[in-house]
Length: 182
Image 1 (cartoon, one colour):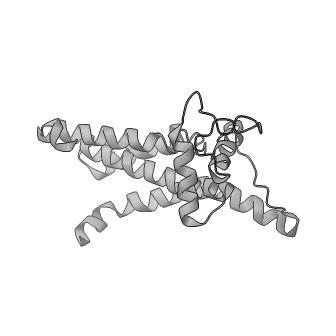
Image 2: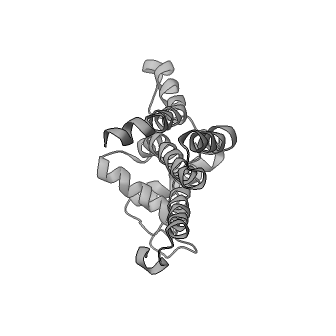
C-alpha cells in the first residue's frame, strides 16, 4: 500500500488541483461579494441554467423532469429522460445540498475523478507513471479543462465512458473474457 501511494501520489495531487481549479471560481465569486451575496451563484456557461432547472425539478418532486420551465405538464412523461440530471439531484439530496450547491460540489469531484480515470487509462496504455501523467494532464488541462466545468455533460456522463474504456483495456490486456466483467 505504501508503495502504491508513493508511486501514484502526483496523480492524486494533480487531480485535487484540477478539482480545485474548476471549483475555485464559484468560491472566489461568493467570497468577493461578501455580504452583498444573495445566494445566486455565478453561471459559467449557458448549459448550466438548463441542467440546474432540470435538477431542481427532482428536488421539487417531479423526478421524470417532463417540463422544467412551465407549470403545466409536470406530471406527464418526458420525451427523453436524461438520468444524469436526476442522479446529480439525488446525490445532492443525500448530502443535504440544494440544487445549486450540488453543482458546485460536482465541479470539484467530477474533474478530479475524470483525471484519475484518464491517469488509470494512461497507466494501462503507456505503462509508466510519467507517460500516464503527461497523457492525463494533456487531456485534462490542455484540451478539456474549460469543458470540465460544464455540469452534467461531460462532468457526469464522461465518468461511465472512461470506466468502460478502462474495463475494455483491462480485458484486452489480460485476455479476460468480457462476460466475467459484466
